[in-house]
View (cartoon, rainbow, N blue to C red):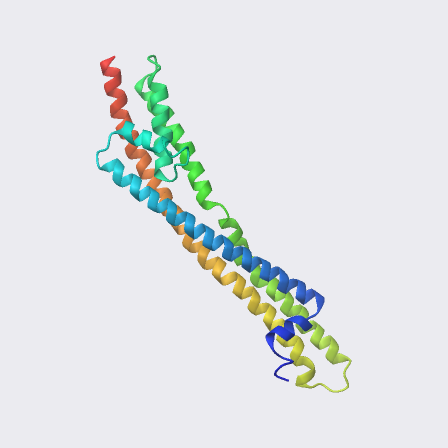
Length: 229
């Protein structure tokens, strides 16, 4: 009886609809864990890169030196460095136009930084919606398998001469396995989504603050340029 009611044997003996539910939940769980580990590496790398760049930026390094260092990355700047690179590139380009006012120049720089900011946030938030979907739907998919397994158990019981626990136990057990698999897929996805979404928001706040500070610095440079000309 113990061997017959082992979880693996119950999964193998489950009905086709319940097996389909279990396969879907296994696929969802694998997708979830893949996204979790990939997103964990990405967020750590981005936060570390932003910390390093911010330390260099506020240490008093020359802006041109920072810009050349960012360009040496071959267009692979991430985090705060990519926002700085976009803003300073636009500043250098617009500064070559003598007829452009300081206000217009800074507005162009802000626009370039906003675009880089949105791209960074989009890159960081990629696949989070998939985690949210897995976390919210997996329990219901598992519940479908549970309902189907219990329904089949009672249908089979109605045709039996006598109602015994041995007759109904396998169907109920396979149904509960489907529920457990749904929760196993959903719980890590929900935890990871909440944690990573919070980290993305925190990085977004840091990007906003840096953009404003950098825009103020560029404003001073633009005004000195206008006064000199």
